[in-house]
Length: 102
Image (tube, rainbow, N blue to C red; front, side):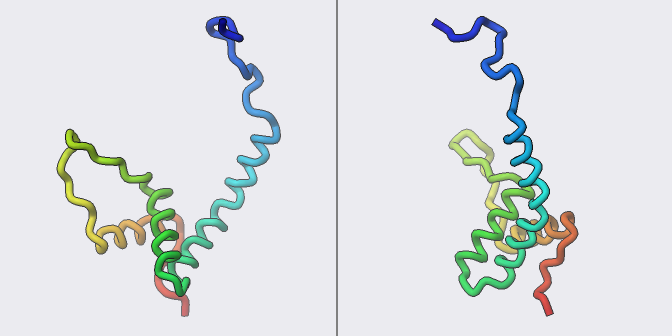
């Protein structure tokens, strides 16, 4: 037995005000969070932290890479140089420079 009739929503009012406030706050802090990732990628002494920050930036800018299966095209993965160029492009679009701070 279904709790709702066909076409009836289980949440007719949609998101609560608290959810909207959290979404607004997260979006407000987005540029600061991106700058933190750029700083970590540039300045962390730990290569793993740099890698993770760069990966998060690439994922946000271009989306996560899709898993390939045996039926998908056989395209090569981007080289490290191509991935770095992609990262510079993301930063440029966001108004940041990836050049080391002086």
